[in-house]
Length: 171
Image (tube, rainbow, N blue to C red; front, side, top):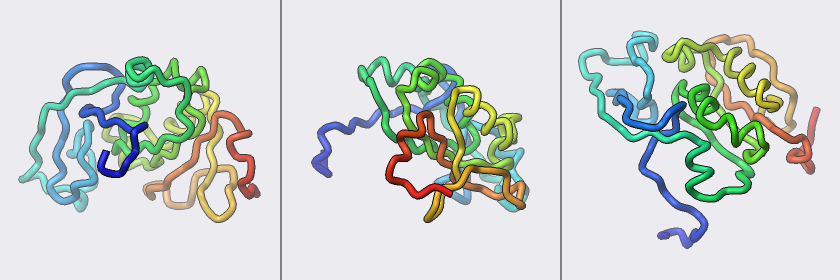
């Protein structure tokens, strides 16, 4: 409410593939890298094994958030869940397949996906299975393909309906 946005609400929960409690790994070096995944699977230089602690958090599914808030459309969603993207997709399968969510920007990175036994390619495939096409973000949107650095983190735009891209410059 501080920003005067009456249509925004905060829910104290993590999105995941199921509802209930989950263990959140608190990253000792990077407050933006807390994860429901296993930090032990991160490269050594990205973790400090001596200071990893865990905290129990509440999880919800995307489908439950859509139902609880009676949402008919989510035009844009930024997903930054440190490797749990495919879990969020599992918990949002109904809403995503039905086109409630129009577009998603998600991090595509093998390092993050590996904490859950997934790969960047399997994430892109999971979006494709739900009817989303991937685009590389930039001054001009281009269809996404794997970059030359397989461990690099890249924000990718996934679009359900290409009419969402009206007005965007495509290559």
